Length: 516
Image (tube, rainbow, N blue to C red):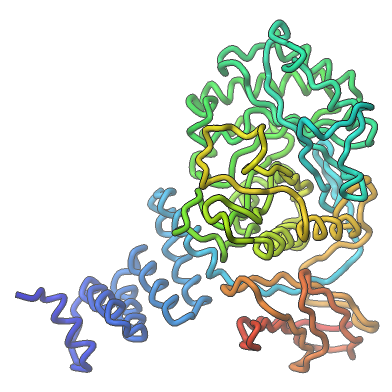
């Protein structure tokens, strides 16, 4: 015998007038409409379910129904209501999972005006006023016999920050191949007039990290005279890391590190760095504002999550990975993307070239930061081929290995960044920066704009700018720069239209403003 809920759904879909009595019945009708492919009826049913019971589940399924009809703005609004309700119930895990599910549908088209950069009233250690310091990983082969960095010959330029991993051990454990302090690396970075970014991982159990090992290390950093980001025991929210096991002990040792380096090595900024997932546990590990100079994050753009070909990242914007960290900490600390890279090759599908994927993601990340996240002041590229490098941990599953090396088209994109003053490579800060398009502007002369664009289609073809409904400029490449004509004083509209390769309109956003 068929269930009453199923019968209600059949009657509804057959066009027979049925008086639904409660939200559960509307929910059941919506589910049946989804299964039958009648998405408009599903939307109507879930809307009624929400009216009767505005629960997280009802909003979530309303969002899923909107997705089926490619109504992504409405889907995002419904998903966001569900996320709020999960968080209100303190269900952080489900809220974060739904946030990740929602991000690909979160379409954005925001216009920015190029304006003179403004000084920041209060800055943390090593924080520039404006701009993004470019950083690059330097492996064991990255220093020549004269203790010079090899990077500049490949990049055609120096960068601002140089990044290296290092194991923290007792001085008595030091050997030629495993030194207590990376003297050659510091010497090479000093010759390049750069900043060291040292990713310190405890080489002993966390409980054994004591003043006796930290003080001589801090003194060595001080004596080097090199500005240093000291990142201690990062990715603590990864359960596979030994230092993640005891949050209370982690905080105790992090505070010890911060106290010693703040006292001894004044040329050091202390970085607290989670990975960009499992954000719900961060409060358990946060040492406190006085012990943290910068908040870092590790994040990557790979074709698949965890090497699983059923978990495609084609539509995942890297800037979305920043949203949670930025919202939580940017008001208190500058943000460092301690590790980032985009993969053009993966062993999950070894015969496919993902160069287009990689170049698009890296442009979205670097320009998305410059436009939307002004307190992100440093991005460090992890320049490693994790498929072939002998320095990669052998235990890493083959399908999870990716090639992050900066080669080919990826290298050319990075070189282009090096030519733009927003991306700091030699400590000369930019004189202009993008800022959100204001409600009032001086438009008596032509003015320069740029746009942040994100659509469900991961490869939009072109962006048009319209003033008062008339197309005045067009761009096909990130960051979609354009110069717009001077306007008469008074009220106007500015619009951004985004199109796919078939000239289908993907997104339209309009803003009112006054020209003065």
